[in-house]
Image (cartoon, rainbow, N blue to C red):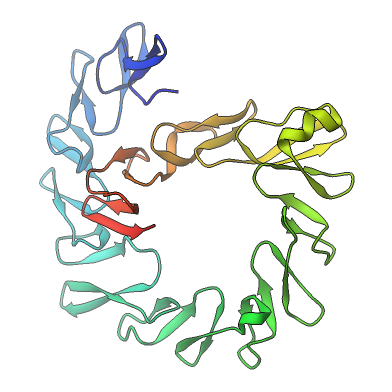
Length: 313
């Protein structure tokens, strides 16, 4: 599959008949431009002057900005470096980091990002040392996050008894003594309080529904005369029929199987493969749900914005 605006030719991707910037084309006439382009009177697509900061525009200028920018006088201006959505250059509404940070107002109409304490998911804007919610594996002890007892392997635990679990991490189950027991490989999840009773399998395996076990996908055809589904991360066998419930990253589950997302997209919309939900490392998601290659993502960076790296491997 080629990126929007390109078509397959001789095994490669080339600019489509409607020229650069065209997403959909009919009878050599462009009907829709890709993000950061607008359509001229003659039907051609022209890049926005403020691209890639600008993702939607017209002949008057920009109408919608990329994440990390705000619109003023039909141009895109930069928010603060930590900010995804802002009202102006000094006031942030939504930070890039989804947890572990709060927005502290330092003056009228001015705020800054402040880190919460370690293991804190969200904290007070007036006092970042006061935690509101903890990350998995921790419990709220007053206003700080303390770890659940390690040997219990809890996702969440009781404040009065940190060794007693309330919930378990995926891939484990609650035992009678309120501790969590991991499922046995290759089970990804298990049921009936039995580590060997699989309800889903690790990638590369197929769940055999008749006995709740996992079989290597490569051995499926030899054992039960069935074919595994390509690029499926979670598949199961009922009789001789293989079904898929989850595709590998970079693919989306459709009626035809696991279809590839466009270049740079790690998770995409099954009903519209060009619409990305999450990008691969080295790409950033713009306001039109397309993944754009970012020169600001150096080697080893797993998440970045137009301002640089947010998270490392």
